Amino acid sequence: MRSNPPSGPMHIPAEFHYRLQGVTRGVNPGAHRGRALGSGMEFRGYQGLLDQPDPRRYDVRASLRDAFGGPRFRAYSQPASVPVTALADLSASMAFAGKMTLLAEFIAAAGFSAYRSGDPFGFVGCDTKPRMDLLLPSTRSKQAATQLVQKLRDWQPEGATAEGLLAAKYWIKQQPGLIFLCSDFHLPLPLLDKLLASLAQHRVVPVVFWQSAEYDTLPRFGLVDVLDPETGLR
Image (tube, rainbow, N blue to C red; front, side, top):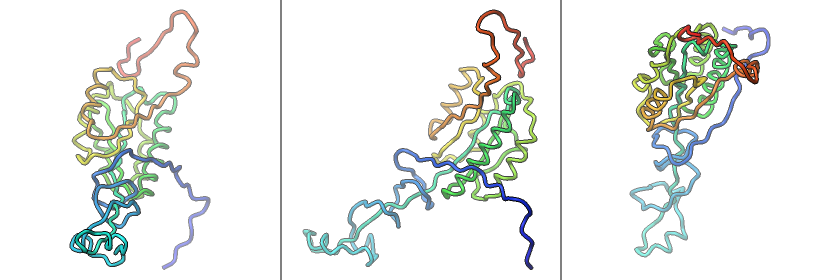
């Protein structure tokens, strides 16, 4: 059965490219430098027939130079995938001046970029605790991130703290991966120190969500009446 194409232009999320330093431990094929040998393009050295029984990689010159006269075969690194996770602060301060809209746009771009790179993508959002209604386990599904983005656009952050970030590690793959830490970083420094320590095995990239309204309208001197959206204190 044929279906009619959707009316109007299709919205394609923005895409960005990320590169990890060093070598990843992943075993699944992907776009990053890996430790395993396979069908990549990065030359790693030579192996014998039993280790690399692929006649297409037979190297005549290396075989002639071999001291024991054995056949030598070229070995290459297999590009690997890494799990990508967006860990988001959903405390009440993130409700200010459209930050959640910016967060939703970033998640759409991150999910699409991970999909295009062949990496699994997951999302953990936290206020006082991890929000199970917004949890996205690591997946390679293109549509999963799209559904999450709509939930984030409709979400109203009300949490008094972001303490739930400390428990997020239980919903993140133990395999070392890439974590985008999304927050306005209006966080207590002890909390931030504990959070980064709990994520030490991963590569953590902070993504800061600030709006100009947070600082452009402040007077150059004098007293200011400030309301904390999380505690309600002035």
